[in-house]
Every structure is written in C-alpha cells, then in structure tokens.
Length: 341
Image 1: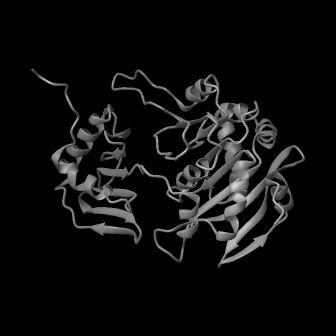
Image 2 (image 1 turned 135 degrees about the vertical axis):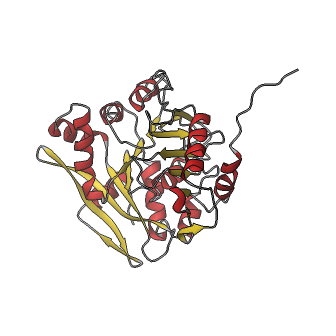
Image 3 (image 1 turned 90 degrees about the vertical axis):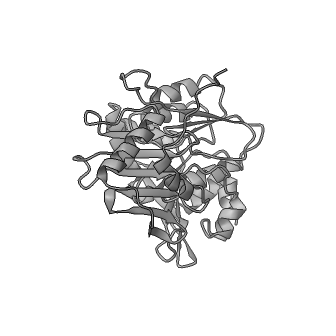
C-alpha cells in the first residue's frame, strides 16, 4: 500500500534550514555563490556553508519554490512562498539578481515572547510596561511601525497575549508569523496565484472575510497595499483594540505612509486622513538597537491626532540612552489608556 506523498526539502536545503532551527537565528540569506549569511544575536554574520555555484543555487531555489506551490524560472524570476514547516522564502534569479540567485529565508517563531520577557531583554523600556499593557486593556486601536526586521511582529504577538481571553481575535497576514498565547486567535493567510495564475486570495479579500467572522479585534500582520482601505473601514465599525504593523522609518512618517497606501486603493489624502483619525489612536515605533547587534527596541510611542483636514502623529514618549522624554502627545495618550502615572 502506498501512503500519501509527503513534501520533503531538497538535500542541499538541510544546511540552511538547520541554521533556522536555532531559535536565535531569524534570517538566513544566500547571496548567490558569494556566500551565506545569518542574522542573530550578533547581527549579520557570514557562515561556513557551501551550496556550490550559481547553477546549483538556482536549482535549489526552484525546488524550494515548487515546494511552496510557486513557479520560479526565466518567465517568473521571483517567488515569495511559505515552505512546509512554516519558513518563509523569497528567491530571485539572475539576470534580475546580478550575481545571484539570491535566497532569503525567515524563520517562523513558534513561541511568542511575553511582555515580561520583552522587558527583560531590553525591547520594552521597563517604565513603559504598564502603559503598553493598559493600551491593550483599554482596547485602543494602534499601529506598530518600523523597518524590516525591527521586531514589529514580535511586539504585536506579545501585546495580543494581553487581551482578555474572552475576546475573539482574527489575524490576517500575507505569511502567518504572528504567534501569541491568547486562547482565541484565528489566523487567515493570503495565497499567491498558482503556476497557472489562479487561486489568489489577497489581504483585501481576507479583511472582508474577517468582518463576517464575528471578530472582537482585527489584526493585520502588515499593512502594505490597497488593503488599507478595508482595514481603516473595519477599524471604524466598532472593532476596538485592533492593530496592524506598517513599514515606516519613524512614527512621524506614518501619516505619509498611510496616504501613499491609500492612493493605491484610489483614496485621496483627505479621505485617508479622515478615516485614520477615527480608526487609529496610537503608534508604537520599534527600531534595531544601534549599540547592541541583533537587539530591537520600542523607542517611541505617539498619539494620532487631527490637524485641520490632515492627520499628524504627536510624540508622547521617547526612549533614548536609558532615559524617557515626554512630548506633546503625552496627555492624549495617557487619557486613552486611563494612565495616571
């Protein structure tokens, strides 16, 4: 009797996936034949792994893409897939990738950090622990901003664990990365079109589905495109305590980023500002620590406020050099959280 076919990784991939098995390694990067790098507690470092020349690496990338149900060849030279086991892979072939192929692998963290653990490792300043917990308990809608790999999803996962256990949370992601101990979390994951160009399920589709699933909180793993219209609409329909992450270099850049994403959905800047002010109240900004390779930190908490026909982000708390500074948005933020300290 023949059993069901089980997807297996190509033999040459095992060395790469073994690196990701280390819980302290977040990313493994193949820079073509020039070498393999890993991102961990010491920051990016080159590792002694040989995958052969460009043809061998190309074959590996194509095999991995196939395992994720995607096509990778000269006609489709880039792929973004989730591999069996949860690892997220992006691959891009030469000649688009000069000196490639390039492969980027990101691990899926199974166990979320708790709030106390993030305080202990320096991600959350100790004086802010009670405040961010109050922000979640008070069901404030917020964004977590930061650059790629700054720790946005890690912080979001920890904060979701603070929500009341009787709340139903629906998480929407392009690739499922949110991991939280909360007992009532449903995960929806987008799907790329298959090799025949069929079967795509977008983030916009999933936001619409989430609204029909009786959510208390709606969480978008990353707001990066036209789905911003549906997200802002959802957050204006009573789903308090909802959240999303967004790429931005600073908390103050969030309004411009939202306006740019809104334009992709056919929204003008005024419509985005109007929706944002009523849908969102706070921004938490995370950064890679400059003094500690591999470390991430929550450095700013800001309030979202109306400014005429526009929207602005007012600094409430800034953490620099082990010191807290309060800004003009502090009173508004403290009122949102009913914080009296």
